[in-house]
Structures are given as C-alpha cells and as structure tokens.
Image 1: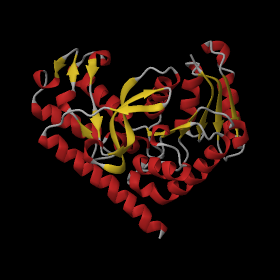
Image 2 (image 1 turned 135 degrees about the vertical axis):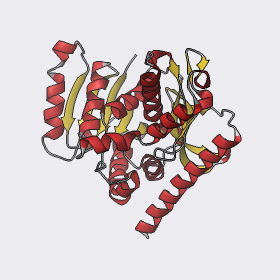
Image 3 (image 1 turned 90 degrees about the vertical axis):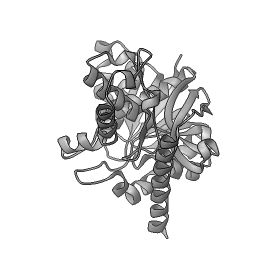
Image 4 (image 1 turned 30 degrees about the horizontal axis):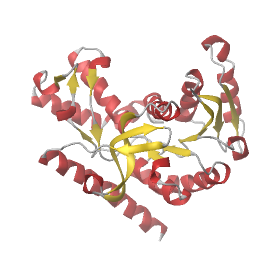
Length: 313
C-alpha cells in the first residue's frame, strides 16, 4: 500500500533525509523534494534516485523549485524554514518561519487542496497553527510532528540507561515541542515492566530532563545546525501510518477542541493516525502533577502564539 505522490517541502538536512526514507520505504510512487534554492532539490533528488538500484526501491524521487510538480500530492511533510543555531530557542525562529509557512501553505492549498500536512518546522506547535489557519483545512489534515520525536529520544535514553533493546520500551511524551514537554513516567514501561520498578526516581528525573533538552544537546554539538535524522524518521513514521491506514496511536501535535481541557491550540497528545490523517485523539488519565505540567506546556504554546501575533501587529 502506497500513495501516488508525497512531497517534502524544504531540501535541507531534515527534508532530504525524509525524502530518502520515504523512497526507501516505497511509501509513494513519486517523492518530490521541493525548495526555493535552485539546483539543491534537483541535485539531492537525483542523487537519491541513483541509490535506488543499490537500495532496491522503485519510488521515483526528484527535486523541483515549483509547486506545479507537487500537484496532487496526498501528503506534504513541511520542513522549510531556518534551523536553530547555538544559543537560539525554537521560539527565536518565530517570525521568519511563520512567513515561510504561510507562503508554503498557500501553495499547498493551491495545488493539493485535499492533502494532509505534517508540520516539522519550529516552533512546531505554532507553525502547525499557522498552517491550519492559512489553509482552512480541517484539523484532521494538519498534524504536527513532535511527540514521536520526543518519545523516541526518551526511549533511546532509557535504553542506554538500562542497557536494553529499544524494541521493548514503550513510552509517551505529551505537551508542546520544547523544554516544557511532558514525558510521562507513569506510561513508560520495559516489556510491560513499569519504569519505576527498574530505575530510581532521581534517574528517571534525569532522563526526563535530558529528553526535554534533547534537541538543544544536539545543537550544542553540531554548532551550525540542528537534529535531522531522528526528526526525519519521526515524520516518515507518521506518513507511513497515514498511507498504510495503520491506525497507529502516536503522540502528535493536534488542534485541541476541548480534549484534555484545552481549546484552540496545538499540543502534543496521543493521536490515532490513519488514511484520513488524525482519526481521533485518545485521552489518557493523568495525575495531578502531570496535568499541571501539561497546563504549563500549554501556557508556553499560548504565549508563543501571542508573541507571534504581537510581531505581526
């Protein structure tokens, strides 16, 4: 089962890695890598296509500078925008990337009005809202990639701490994509064994803190860019769930309309993803401390939206 066409917007590290993974997994017959920089998407797309005989995939991957090439795409993975540099927060990217996302979304709406948007550009929750408002799409078709990445980081750190396979670790990270995200230790287990039975609380707290700072840790190493392998893998996992109608429950940024007590904002929550995009939001029980942490995260997203509105006024 595959789509006819999937487009990745932005041919930087995240976007190029997305298109490579999409083609290798043959999630679409055509994978388009689109970017305003002349030659960059074409060169990377051709390079990836030339890997097809070695990797054994038949998905046609190519680059373009115009959105006519993207017409009829069923899914758009949006990675366009500037990336973080050391000392920058995701929110520092706010005004520049909001302008980029508006422009991109208008093009998506023009050439593929029935498509699904997976937002990757930071600050992610706010950029998803910009895309939702610009496109006029229903919330089911504008979803943010956040929790899948954050949960993957959390799981990877737990695997290192316990020296166990990542395959046996189940976890859940809710909230905004940033330092106020909420890794839920109460929903974390290793082959069904609660994490609290395997680690002392101070070690769990340290893993939670490392997860919250996971993106910044990579930025501090790279100096001139931000993470791309894990964000791309997370985005493609979401696309795969949609294309194959897997109805997977994954933590994603969704436009809340009363769920968890929040209205009119994007926040990371457990989402069922299928052929229609967001099939439904799953509400899990949270204790008082977890609810308070989620409320704090929601407040941060709301304040960032307000900051963007102030910049535009």
